[in-house]
Length: 334
Image 1 (tube, rainbow, N blue to C red):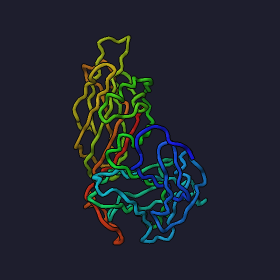
Image 2: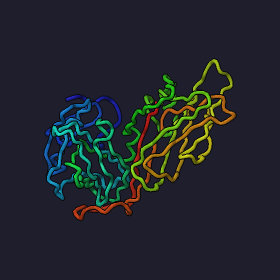
Image 3: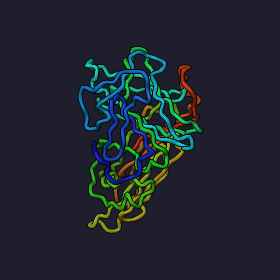
Image 4: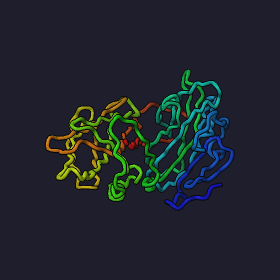
């Protein structure tokens, strides 16, 4: 068993290793076996292991029971939670047929899980969920026609005041030039406190070319988005009197401009509410005429709001519902 390294207090974080027959610790978290949380399904080992131990086991639900659920206890006094669920097929059944199934939370459909996406690698679904005095979340996996057998690898719940530390940043692939070794002061002085490792690298376009980033959305219908951009200003010693001013567009609609604050400082731009429609949106950063430097960006966060009152109805065996969740993506673009 590994000892935990110094870091944030994680005693109120809840991490469930689905399909595991034991509880264990990594350097930060205590992962619990899921025996106390679900009474149906089969424990399985994946066919191809990953470096993340919690993805190497799973619980599969082949019988299509109304009880294919997890009852996850929470603090009734906590107003909001991050809920993160992990999926990795890993050809655990030897069939090479990653399934598709529905995920429900508290009487409402959360999303459809297609485990053939992400090139077969592990992935997460995450929401920020408001708690209205409940003492548990009920998370259920529901078979769909010809979709295969649902499964799940991990469940994590974290009270919203812990989100400074519990944010997963994924690194995106782009064709733009990488800029490495940015000052770590960017993270320390930035709103929302992005990690140093996220702010240490950025991408920059060439000359007058714009940067265009494509984001997948969790639903196709019009939705309200909350978008945060982290734009660094790097000193080029051979370019005195530098300025970096950007025009921001979302799906071709003007969202104003952003000017970097000063040398070796980070500008955080927040856009909300922005009405967008799926399945994807394009965020474009282009240089304004008076700017001497091309667009640069280190990271972004994208949240979308889903009205649970108009989502698909759930089977009758679910318990209760809240009115609003936020689905979000965090991207380190370098």
